[in-house]
Length: 587
Image (cartoon, rainbow, N blue to C red):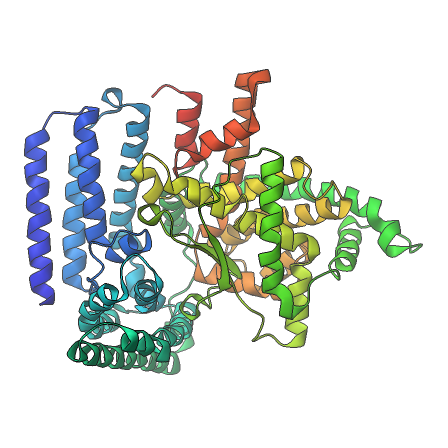
């Protein structure tokens, strides 16, 4: 059944692609490109059904892709065929909007081919394999009645065993860190198939036979996941230290991944060098505020001659002002309306009151990656679905660990975190992205633009008076912004320059003024991810530069709200492409 599906799907898509090329050979206008975009999007969802599910497109929900060699061969054939079709289109015959879509599709196809042929994380990253997220999405979303969703999941259950068997065959010399992560997240996935799943089955309108079949599917899924966990634990037990693949990418792979993931006017080395210079600027600004605040927090104590020592001491005092560990999540919930009020009153950008934001505890299958807070957006096909603000609770922390974490996310930085993740950061940007008239710009989201907007929002809010220009807020903002800068320095230094752990922790605590718990979490994160940590500062730099360019171009006619709404109207396109659209640059 697995091979039949792939053959049927592969023949359908590849035949359609051949007919498409014949029909439109030599025709390169907007009308034909609009048809090609529709075809590409449909192909994309067949390539990646779980991604389709995550953005609210439910045509392929019943398909659980078995990640074996036959599937990867079919993917490459389709991707290369798409690349051939793209060569029919030239920039001069397309509108600016379609030209940007053309660039984005080409970028994505090339990235997908590179991932399969060069990066090959399917071999060395066991955490790639986890069915928990897609089943949880189907169980908890409200796009269709429960009975329909349960029948869809029943089709997926039939492939779970093959899925994990293929995963085991794929794994070849993995990294220790990703293997450990896979165990943690797979154990979290087991919770998806707990009692609450059967409760949903029991209250459904399915027949007795259907309920029994799903119950069997749940049992088999738990057995398959448990078997995968056992398989990984054997690898962890028997693999010698010298046999693990290094989590460090090295310069060649890193430069390529930066090119495909970030899609920036900068190279990886250029943004690293820019971040090093920015760190020096921030230290100077922070020293200025530390000197101003010293008498208020340190009394008559003599101020240290070394700037970083003075900064650290003032930050440590201010950081004692934080919420209680038991009220961390409720404090986040309570602040969201305050941010909405400020943005609305200062006319910074329109916020749609019809799009809900729900603060929730981070699901178990998402834990372990090192990110304490994140946003889960419903995607452009489910525009009115809930956007979730995922917050990791402190339940597993010792009192000392919790105190360190809360000092890091103190009274001031917790507000900046909420600006970044929610209003007017990720949540707001993703709502606009879902409403973009170009579906390509919404579904092929550029991480540097998305993260860059959130980082830009932090400074923009303070520039417009958020926090009443308190010196404490500005000092803590610079500390927070230093995190984005040091993320870039850390990521490049670890993966390219081979920075060791002790040096990295010292860098984060002494140069970025982070608490030990935060520094340890970031070290874990940089080992598990590559390049993504550079997206924050890269995107911020490009957006801020673009705003300056637009201000210079428009002069007295410049409107901050207009700039924000126009910028976000292009979806989640790379900033360098949005720049071309907003400044109407020549091709």
